[in-house]
Each structure stands twice: as structure tokens, then as C-alpha cells.
Length: 168
Length: 96
Image (cartoon, rainbow over all chains, first blue to last red; front, side, top):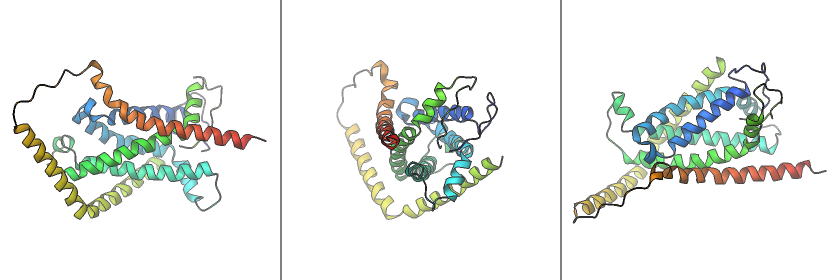
């Protein structure tokens, strides 16, 4: 992804510094979500609900890349970019299924928001399967952007060293 | 912010589509899964109603960290394999 390089110290929504911080936050929330036995069900459900807006901001911060690659989907592109595009789309669909099924089988959040519905274990099974698949998908996603993450962490706070220009 | 608005729109549409698909899928397949879960729950209740069971041993200190181990392995293994393959591919491509 070609990222406009904003002022060196600024943290705008499109800057690499913002994106790195946001990705770290997203990763921490995601790891918390992977173990509901450890965090307890209420925290798991609230963190799961919080992941939806976090995901939207992550997509918005990388929106230029998404638009660019989707517009040129039928044109010749490097294999890595094409793989990333397909993988990210798949990950988005699985994430939406995991969040939606999580809301549908929720016990604490839905009740505390004033809604009541009978607990349906079918959605619990859908949620469990989609969440497990999502963990593996995220692993590959992180592997694809490993260089970008390392480059961002190595970068000095003053921003003297330019970081790589990888995709989302 | 235009991007954010578009992002929200995409997420809303995707959620609506996913919800519709899940509602369509919630028919025969769901009944089968529900029947299996019901049978498992009944078996568990029968076991719990049975004779006295000894108390399970005390959980170790790392009880709260241990549940993260499995998911982290599921995430790290494909991630490391992908990163390794990517490094090899890039190295081969950069070779003259």
C-alpha cells in the first residue's frame, strides 16, 4: 500500500504511527477475546462488541488500499497483493460472521442492553467455529505484514528512517 | 471523515448480508446441531445427578494464562509459516 507520509511527528488517522498503535490495540483486544475461559463471559462479550468499531477504524485507516486494489481487481497485480486482497476479504466475512453469531448467542450484553432472547446453542457453535477459523486467518494476516510491523517498531520516534510501504 | 463513513456503510451492509445468510442457514442444519447439543446436555445432567464425585484438584497459578496458549499457537504457527514463505519468495525474486 502506498501511504502518504504525513508530517513526521503527527499522528493522523492515515499515518503509519496511528495505524501501528491502532493495530496493537486491535491485537490486544483480539487476544483477550480468544480465551473467554480466562477473561470471563461479560468481558469477552463487551470486548467482542468493542471489536466491531475497532475493525471499522482499521478498515477506514486502510481504505485507500482497499479501494485501489478492488478497482484494479481484474488487472494484472503482483501475487502478494492479490493474495492479500483475497485473504483480507475472507477475513472480513469470517469476522462479521463471528461478531454477528456472538451477538446472537450472547447472554450478558444483550440482556444488559435491555433485550431478552432465549439462549440458542446453534449460534454458539457457529460462533465457536468462525472464531477459531478467524484466529488462524489473523495469524496468516500478521505473517503477511510481519515486515511492516517490524519496520514500524524499529523506526525511531523522530521518524528519521522511512518505513516500508506494505498493505493493510 | 469520508473513509470512516464508507467503512461504516460497508460493515453495515456486510452485517446485514451475513445476518440474512445466517437466518437462511438456521433451518435443518440448526435442528441437527441443536439435537446433538441437547443430548450432550442431558447426558451431563444425568452424570451430575449421579453419586458423589471427588472435588477436582486445585488449579495452578497459571490458570488464567493457560487458556491463551492454544489460540496463540493457532495464530503463531500459520503466521510464522507465512512469514517464512514470504521471506523465501522475496529472496528468490531478488536473486539475479
